[in-house]
Image 1 (cartoon, rainbow, N blue to C red):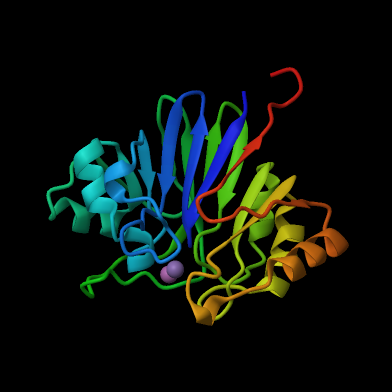
Image 2 (cartoon, rainbow, N blue to C red):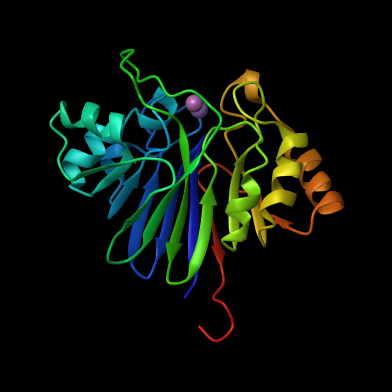
Length: 233
Ligand code: NI
Ligand code: MN
């Protein structure tokens, strides 16, 4: 079964696998790189890496309408709960949440996590999502850190890494991160939304091809990529 990854622009991602849809970091309506509106999205699960507006802006609206479970850190789950969102699973770094169709491990990230109204958003994280034995790592907003090596030990097929620099790691550190994680495919995120995080993807592709064993996969905002089935699946 193919694993379909959709980039809605900035750091908002969708996964489709075996008829289930997961949205990571819902930021649609005010996202300058996104042409899809929150009202058009259907999903079975919502994941939120941290409290910044460019990751959580449309979480409450999407959660309320779709009634999809939301997995995020504990502090963010409390904050969403106060806005009338139900079906929340608050967790913390290192934990794994199990759903009928996937499991979600919250990984560390080196980043901040204040919520849009200044509330305490806990600490920032990333997610390793396992669906049907396939593993995809969303690093979230983060600097490079050497413990990405441990994420790699889980066996990552696809790693989605920020490359925009300034607020997260940039191109050079994403190459180092790719070598720590050793995924089969690596996909760039969190760039070209606004001028301060503009990046040249040709430069990134060249560096990944030259300095890592991973295959770079660049999506255009609004576009999708299907990772084909494993042999024997
Ligand atoms: Ni952030
Ligand atoms: Mn961000």
